[in-house]
Image (cartoon, rainbow, N blue to C red; front, side, top):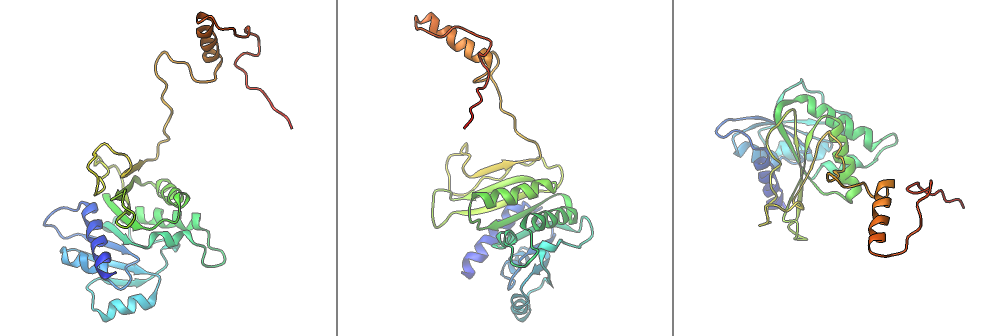
Length: 251
């Protein structure tokens, strides 16, 4: 388990795409016993760790990790100065914000407060990388939607998408205007495959209609279809004032 935690931390740092040979100041959400923080230290970075479990932080203190540790519930928001951190990592913790463990806990509000406060304390152009274990697609949508509402762009990076055991999901977020493309997931040879990256942004996607083509089920589309059938010698109903209108069905 320790080896897997270290590997996930190393992969998260890789996805942060930090400047080479330059120590950065990073935030570790759900730092636990400090395993991920030790990876940050080994990479030459300074870090602050947050965790909701005081028992896990006590273990980190006993292990004498080099980060600054704080007992805090990330769902209540982060209270650091704007632009404090050069990046953020989180290993196996993000999915817990989707739970309502206490009376009054609202996962939607907690996620939005977390992401909006995280966006504020990150320097513009930096990244936040979350490795997490979603229970279902609805949970992924809930998390990414709240991150998008808070101002982030980015998306999911899926390593080894075709493997049951090796598959790992990372939410890679960009703070501010970023021209970088979303990183590719490991374990796929097809660089054009969309199954290892899922992008999203603050803009809604619109359905593209080819020039010269009518939208399906509209009046013009129905007339064109009927005309093609007439040219083929097939019998069709004559046009009327109801052609192309949606029918109302009552029960």
